[in-house]
Image (cartoon, rainbow, N blue to C red; front, side):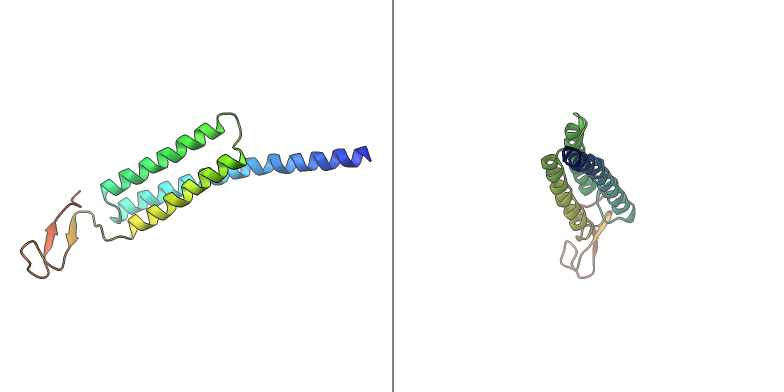
Length: 127
């Protein structure tokens, strides 16, 4: 009977031990994916320099939290959930910033500064 209990306990610990690196891998993979999305947004012109700087700063805050969580060798479930929630917010922000009307360089406007229709103007979004 003790042998069965020991095997069950060992199996449970092995499952938890295997789950932790997987969750850390998910966190790191998401960081890489979000960095790539920001880079592609800059290349495509979907993100202005200012937007990209703010998004990268948010990514650095998440990285700092991951580093702090991994300092003792493992990420606890509570830390993982906090990091994943931050990554969810960052992902939504990246999506929103890439799909808003900000354009690098020139901003298309129905009216130029004098109210003339169809004007292009240099604005806040100049690189």
